Image (tube, rainbow, N blue to C red; front, side):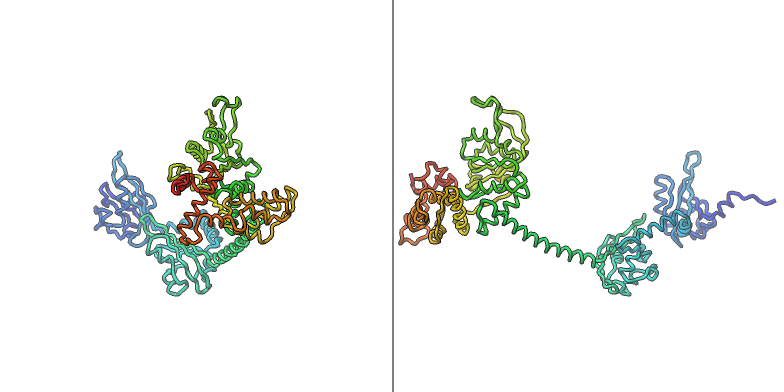
Length: 580
């Protein structure tokens, strides 16, 4: 008769190393494999606390006793090798009676796993993915030893895989395979690092990034290094620089096309300043910009510039609506801008009226002389600019209107804001894009072109053939044109229509006051020829200008528009020079 295998035999002869602990964590049983794998002695360690005997088990056992739940696959560093720990709690009659701790060598588990078909398939897939990458990829362990690298890394570094696997990167660094290693920097810092490497063998510059992967204990388990050939990036950089040069070339060509486009507009621009204004205007038009503020003295062509912007924008097929904010009283201006509902006031149209905002829907609304807009309407305009909604006078319905708003003024809006005559929030809302047209006296190179343009225009219109010789042209170039382009246009039309002679030179001189330019006459009239004090002379000229302007205009507001200054400034100067 043979003796039957009992539980003690199974416990002792199993391939797994087993240690049984009681509810206090003390060792109660140890099998034969455990004494070998863990260097335990039954006589010396029985009834001793397992976490004290094997210090590397303190953390997992502490976690186990905190909740008495099963632990599976916990990796620990044993006395001889890396181990995988499983802890299973034992309950008797629902009371905790201890636990069974089972240990296996990680190496044996990995060898077994590698023999499975699923592991082989996954491993092949990973190898193919890594090898198909155009970037170089290294994998090192927590000590810096090379585990694997792909074919791209072999080509970039000029090395063979079987010559470096198992070697430490420090050894490769000492043998000058590369000038510096990102792996050693990751091991030092514990963080992701990026460096530039030079590979002497292949004469390549590589951008290398090392990324650490951590185990359960927070230690670096793996370092994955990604490296890219900077030679390719240098090529891209050169291509980019070349594309930038081509872009600049196209930009110059587009600029030339823009100048040709300017020639098709009725605005004459030969001076650099005016060309710059028109080019900026065309850019804003093509971008579909709104809230454009045009500044300039009276007669410089603000209305014409606004029409040019509209004409060259995507809104050109929709209405261009213009209104002079200084031409109407407050009540009528509000009605014109926002419209009114039927029965809004006595005398109102029984059907109501559509305002200019609604008329300009999809197009452009040009608000000339915005500086003269009453404060109440400034608030309503600001509300529209914020939400693009209007409400008719006497109505409750809200209308959504989409139109580009261009405003213009010859006044100093910033000064008006200080004087509480213009809303500060509206000022900053309107001046998203500012176009400041210089006065004609500051762009004399445009005068001759403007004269020729209007001379040809009015000769055609009135079926005439008037001409201006070079001496008269020179005379006009010296004239100050206080009324700017509007005055020049009026002068040319006047001489074409009123003078019966084909040569208008004498008529031009006569209409402007003799053989000297008008501003010279003004200077001689206002200043003593023996007085060379600049301040005194300027004051006298200023006084003479005010006296002359007051004779031509009846209100200080009209004088301000003509002189290109604010109405309060006119009042102050009239009082300063005691001009009644």
